[in-house]
Each structure stands twice: as C-alpha cells, then as structure tokens.
Image 1 (cartoon, rainbow over the protein chains, first blue to last red):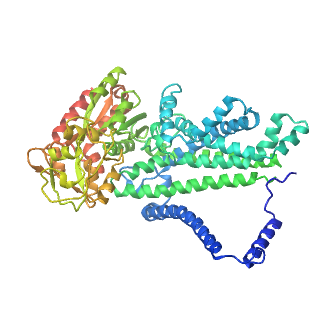
Image 2: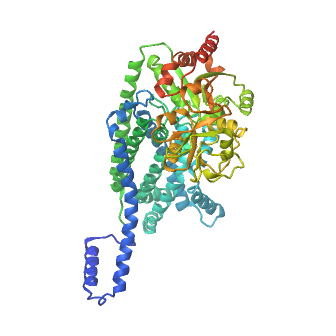
Image 3: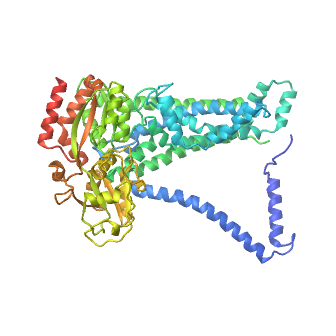
Amino acid sequence: MVTEKPPRTARTRLAVAGARAGVDAGRVFGPRGTADRVSNALFLALLLLGLAVAIAGLAALIIWAILEGAPRLEPGLITNPPSTLDRENAGYRPAILGSLYLIAGVIAIIVPLGVGAAVYLEEYADQTRWYNRLFELNIQNLAGVPSIVFGILGLAFIARGPLSLGFVAVAGSITVALLVLPTVVLAAREAIRAVPPSIREGSLALGATQWQTVWRQVLPGAMSGILTGVILAVARAIGEAAPLLLVGAITFVVVDPRYFEGSYTTLPVQIYDWATRPQEDFQVLAAAGVLVMLALVLVMNSFAIWLRNRFEQRW
Amino acid sequence: MVSNRWLSVVSAGVLALGLAACGSDDDNNPDDGANGDGGSLSGSVLIDGSSTVAPLSEAAAELFMGENGGVQVDVATSGTGGGFEKFCNGETDISDASRPIGDDEIAICEANSVAYEQLTVANDALSVVVHPDNPVDCLTVEQLTAMWGPDSTLASWSDVPDLEADFGEPLELYGPGPDSGTFDYFTEAVNGEEGAIRTDYNNIGENDESGIVGVEGSPGGLFFVGYTYFAENQDRVKALQIDGGGGCVAPTEETAQDGSYAPLSRGLFIYVSSSALSKPEALAFVQFYIENNDAISGAVGAIAMTQEQKDEATTQVDTLVG
C-alpha cells in the first residue's frame, strides 16, 4: 500500500521525541539564540491565548447558566410542559421532543442527499464541464448564505407556496436541512478525495464496476470524514432558531409535537422566548434551558463521534 | 469487517428509534388521561401575534386546557403585524394585537375573505422607562416627539427642549421593531404617523427584555415598552410620567384603566376569525377568555379590564354564541 499520510506509529513518535531531545540539548543544531527562544515562547503564548479565549467563552456561558439556572435543575425541567401560570414547574418537554424530531428529519434528508451530491461531484462529474464547476461554486456560496434567508425560502416554498406543508415540524426539518446541506456536501467531498486513488485503481483493476468501487471501497473509506461533516451540520441545525421562527416553530405548545401535523417548537426557540419575558422565573428557566441544550448537543455529538471512530480507516 | 460495522450501527439506530418510540408513547398517555375528564370538546386553536398579549393568551390557554383536555391551544409570538399577516392569510384562528387592525391589513383580510371580530382582553400603559439615576421625572409628548421624530438628530439629553432637570448624558434610544404593535402605537401617538420614527435607535425586535437590560446599563437610556415589563422590573428601571397636555401622569393600573395616562394608554385585543367562531372549541375558548379575564390578567401581571369593558366584551361574546 502507498503510504501517503504515514500514521503516527510508536516508531515515528520515538523519532520525533529523539529529534526534540537532540534539539533541546543543543547537540544537533548547535546552541539556540535568545531571539529563537523568545519567538518560540511568544508563539506558544499566542496559541495558548487562542485556546484560552475559546475555552473561556464556553466556561463563562456554562458557569453563568449553572448559577442562574440552578434553582430549576431538576427532572421536571425535562419532563414537564411549559407553563405561564405555574412557572416554578414549567419545563421543556415539547421543545426537546420538537428538536429531536426536527433533527431526525434533518439527518434523514442530509445524509443521502449530501453524500449523493459529493459522490457525483468527486467520482462521476467531469471537472472540465462548465456546469459542474458552476455547481461547485454554488455549493460553496450556499454555505455562506445567512440562515434567515433559508427561513424566508422555507416560508415561501415549503410552509406556503408550492409544497404548502403548513407550519409543521416536517417543514422545519426541510428548511434546516437545506441550510446545512452544503456543509455535508463539502465535508463529504473532502473525505472522498482523501481516499487514495490506489484503492480505486486496485478495485477497478480487479474488475469491479465504478458503482461497486464507490459503494464497497470509497464510501466505507470516507465514512469517518463524512460523519464529521454530518456532526458539524447537525450541531448547527440543532442550534438554529431564526429560520424556524418563520416556518412556524411556535413558542407555547404544551402537548407533545407530531411530525406531519400540529404545532411544534424547538429548544432554541423556547429558550429565546423565555429569555425575553419580564418575570424572573422565566429568566431562570431560560438559563436552565441553555444547560439542557448543551447536554443534548453533547450527547448527540458523543454518539456521532463514537460512530465516527468505529469507521476510522487508516491507509 | 465492513458488514459487521454496518450491522452494529444499524442495530444501534434501530435501538435508539425503538427507545424514542416507547418513550413518546408513554409520554402521551398521562396527558390524555389526566386532562380528558372534563369537557367533551376536541380540536385545536392556533393563536399568533403580539408578544405583549401572548402571556395573557398563554394563561388563558392553560386554564382552558385544564378544563378541556381534548383541546390543544398553541400560542405563537410573531408580533402584532406578523400575527395579522398570518391571520389574514387564514393560517391562524385568533390574532393577539396590541393595537387595532390597520387599513392595509383590513384590505388583505378582505381580499382573502377572512372576516373577524375584535375583543378587548386587557389594558396597557405603554411605559417610557429610563435609568433609575436619571433626574428627569416627566416628559411631554412634544419632548418625546423631539427625541423620536423621523427627522430627529438629538444626541444628548441636554438637547431635549425645556427639560425640567439639568442632565447631560448621551441619549440612548431603545425600541421594539416594526412588527410590534407597541412600535405602531407609539409612533402613531407620539410622531403622528404609524411607522414614522428616527432610524438610528437600538431596534430590539420583539425581545423586550433586552431593552430593559439596555436601559439598565446606560445612564442616558430610554425605552418604550408594555406596562408588564416595567411593573416586573421596577428595581431596574424608572418609568417617566407623561404629559399629554393635562399635566404629568404616571403609568399605573388606574391611569391606564380610566384613560388619564394619555396618549399612551391603550387596549390589548384579540381578533377572532369567523371561521374559528364556527369551531365549537374556539368559540368556547373565546368565551372562557372573557369570562375568566380577571384571573388571567392577574396571573400574568397585566392591567385588567374595567367593569364597563367587561360588560361590553360579555355582550359581544353572548351575541357570538347566539
């Protein structure tokens, strides 16, 4: 097998460690100048600063939410429906279920469509054709379109207009799926491109058709990269509120949502609504909701990462 | 190898789905059982509109669903204008509104043959709130116009004409966005034309709480908002008295009910479409909303209707029930 990206085996690690020890002892490249040491330290400090800013933001959010939401961190927060009258016992159940339904729909849409588009562009499309290059350019552009624009699209074409699904959860799923689809296509393309050509050539040389090569060699090899794209897409989808407000994610629903009929709400929409209420109880609920949201994202991402690691392939 | 992996993934997926299905089945039952004993009504009522009226409708919905477990009442908050847009498109049963329906909206409703009935459900004193340390206690409508007018460029409190106190902080204006009935009402009452307003204020959309946060954090801040937001946040912001020509009047329940807090006291309404009124569950809900008005407005801290308004609304509902 051609080793294009050598894995970090015990041997490479040993070699790296040895080289580093040699450099540190000053025996290989001679003694280090002060300028080298300063710039080294400065660079490391910059890297740590970058990390610290990212971590501090998350830590501040979590600490604030825990302090603020502490009085409501109890099972009722997850199992109870929202309430305007009985605020001490209000909870997020319809919102959590709504978010899960929505995400299930998003995954069901983006995985086949996203991977299909990526396979076409990487394995079948003739890059010299102008229309294929136009597709590529447009997918990259779509990834940068603000989410509210997809909300307007969803309102005009999915909830109303040609599809006229109404303001139901499936309309929300389709809208958000369109929003995150480019992320999946781009990530899946990268993953497919990372599969060494020798794998394809070997498969074709042994008499497999192109379809068989893609299905049995390329896709399994690219699976972990594709799943990374799906994780990113789902993480973005679950946090979206703006486009959903336009396609009917309603803020006060006390019964469990259904997928194809009836009103629904999602966690971010419910949190947003409560965060804007004047009463203190709602502020506490919103903070506690932030923690529910973070926990939900963490659980979903952990599952996806576990899944990805099962498919990890080394060439 | 590959097929083994797929097998485990698929089975994990099936397992997860199975769990979810069991979970939601169990979840549905207690609701049906617990609430289904009273009332024989079923169906759903969809409400959308003003964020100022939404808490009232939510409270009404909760109390109503407590007695009628078979009915599902959902309340969305798209703002008064956003609510009317859906209402006149026939997509909602009831529209919450913090101002009367506008001429252009009436035209759209008529074009889509949506007939409706307007009912008052509460009163509101549109409160002008400032930082607690602000020495000013009272503003005339003219002074408000000077601040908020479409051509206004006032940047400091010291530029406000005839200000009663010496105050030099920069003027930081906060207000809701144009989908809001509060916005429409304020611009009409203060600037003389609905929607006419200077464009460089901090537009907080439908998120009234962030306006309170903004004023709390800026000594020269000023924000107009529904009475409930002021009442719940009296320790954070101060409401100004308003002089509409008859002297300075503070926003209170009494001055809103008797209309002396002019021109910023207003009614809060629900609009019920005639197609909704033909649904027994929606008609029953509207009836319930009016009959239990004191309990509902009390629960959410809104200003209740006067006896006169209640009598009028009751008569209206009686005619509707027929």
